[in-house]
Length: 250
Image (cartoon, rainbow, N blue to C red; front, side, top):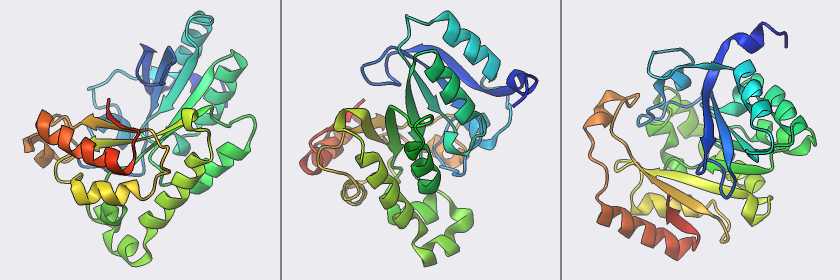
């Protein structure tokens, strides 16, 4: 990859975060491009792979400059998206950050098990921590997450198979180096969906839930959906805890 490409807008840099890498003071880089179209997603510009003016984009060179400047202060780097397993910058970023002594956390939507396995099996690219999203009941992905491919994926059981495989890959990590994440979107995450999602996870999983934000959603109709109340969220997480004790609202 040449020097010019390092100076092209590539993603959003968060210079310091205490929440993106559990237990580690880190930086985060959210890369453009995604293979899903979650209707509630508010990172519209990143997902669609274009600068829509909602988030100023940074270059990979700006990321590298920041990592060099913060050596000895930040301990980790979270690479997120979008979907970083699709992005050609990801291997370059991992190698550079590791050269500078950073721990690497990779966020993935779990739909690319071949790519995930390739990273895990490559000592130069293997993340130190993996976080995998679970959007809803795997059987509902084709209908509500990628409706453009609904008929094909329903017939093949595509999402059920790939999510199960990805979850097993993530579960191969030690318990303190992995987590799963779910946004509490009322149409997508109900009690029956939680039961189906929990079936993918090991019993010692860290399952982190987040509240839905009804703003700037890819599907504008989701801007009109009210988030769960605190009590409704607490009830759902209490049920999740019965299945996966390490379930929490982040």
